[in-house]
Structure formats: structure tokens, C-alpha cells
Length: 364
Image (cartoon, rainbow, N blue to C red; front, side, top):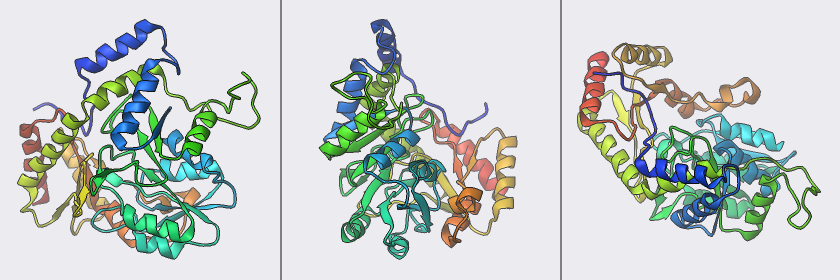
């Protein structure tokens, strides 16, 4: 059997046709019909009034933060287990990163820990819908209302995930998405901010384009950013979005293949799905009971020797030198015992079987 990668994009003829159309149009930079189509269609999909394309998911987070006026002197609460971009975007805004522990089942931010971390300087919460499972947005929104806080969803890994039928990206004050090559939907690089707030929408568009005056070209009254997506990327995004139900159905099927073969393994804990929540299973995750970081990393190397790629869970943000802070027991345990298994769209049931067979053998 050939080597099985952890991830690779699914590019159909539809994506090729749309991108080629954008190339032929001559609109290859940040203007063109596909930008408008992608923003409108993505907003419709998420159930929001507005969506703004960006150059990547990190830019989306940063742009959302500054559009809400978050900056120096402010504190932003994030989960300790997340990709570093969540913390870095807060840092770019000048605000202080406050990390809190996660829920042991969903791996998302623990709302009780959020309550404990709120101070007079807290201005926002960034729940991360980690690995495809939504954070506890109903509870977090209530906390935010009680303390007059902004909620910005980091939905980089959770396109199409839902709570009680409402899609992520439309549950907080704003949602941010990534379209990196390994995400549920990809544009190569790229991102999106969704919101229902017209004032924030206008602010997002203004700051994204160097904060240029809309009536006086090349006039800038404040510092903005070049966070624009290209028409070529948006063309791919339009095609990918048209295929999202197909992609999500396959993601669920891949998880079910793993679940069928691993559910009897007492050492293994698979992705969780809360009642009323829709997990989109961006990647299949396992946590291995009784393992530590050294054993987990040895397992990753052993799988690699059998032609199977895998990835460790993220390191806790609080372990990074620039964000060194409080210890978070659940985030640290998950980080040391967790890994992601191959979950790409085109993986076959036979390949999943090969992964599971080798994994079970190694765990013995």
C-alpha cells in the first residue's frame, strides 16, 4: 500500500473550471466576480447577513479583533489547546492573551474556567471549535451578555458545524474561518469573517483594504491592512462551497469507519459529539489512555515506518515562551496523549482499515 498522508485537498473539475475562468477574466488579484459570489454564498451558508474574505485565517481573526476595537490594555480569553494563530492574532492587536482550560470531552474551551478568568480588563472571548466540534456557544454567549463581552468564534476547523441547527460563524458577534490546504474547504490560503453587524462589516472591509477612504482614493486616515483574498482563490472557494455537503458527508463516513474498527479498544478515546451539536470531524482524533508524550511520539514514528502519517495534538499555548502562564491540567493531558489520524476526503475504507490494523498492533 502507498503512503497514507494525514491530509490532502480534494480538487474536482469544478474547482479547475472556476479558477481557469478567473484566470481568463484577467481579474487575478483582489477584485473580480468570484470575491462577491464567495462572500455572498458563504454568508448565506452560515446564516449570517455578511461575510468578508481575507488572505488567511489568522488575518481573519486579527481583522475581527481590531474591527471590534480590541487593543492595548484589553484581555482576550482563549482556550489553552488551540493552534498558535488564535493567540498570535490577539497579540497582534496589542491585547493580552488569557488562556483557560478545556472540556475533557469536546476539547473546546471550558465555560466555567472562562467565568473564573474574567477581570475588569476582559473585552472578548474566542471560543475555538477544535477539530470540528463546536464550543459551548449558548453558555458562552450568556456569560458574554452578563459581562458585556465580544464573542469571536474561531471556526477555522469547523465549516458547517452546528448547535441546535444553527451553523458556527453565526452564533457569536463574528466568526472567523480558514481555507488553508488541509481545512474542510480550501482556497489554498485564505480566510473569512462572518457577522450580522453592519457597522462591523463596514469596518472589516475598510481595514482589510489599507483603510482607504471610499470617496477619496489613496487617502488613509488610520493604519489598515492588506488582508485581501484574490479572485483566483475565491473562484476555488465558490466551487468548494458548492461541494460542502458532499465533503461533510464523506468526513462523517470516514469517522464512522474508524469508529467501527476502534470502538472496542479500551485505550482509545475517539472524537466526541455532544447532544444537539454537529461535529464535522475535520480530523479523526484519538487520545490514548496511559500514554505520555514520549510514548505518543514513538507511536507516531512507528506509524510513519508503516507508511502512515499522523500528527500530535497542538501544544498548549501556555507552554510557549511568549505566552507562559497558568497550568491547565486537561489541555496538557490531551496535548500529550492525543494524535490526529489520516482523514482526507479521498481516503478509502481499505486505507482506514490499514491504519487501524497497524494502530491496534502497535498498541498491543
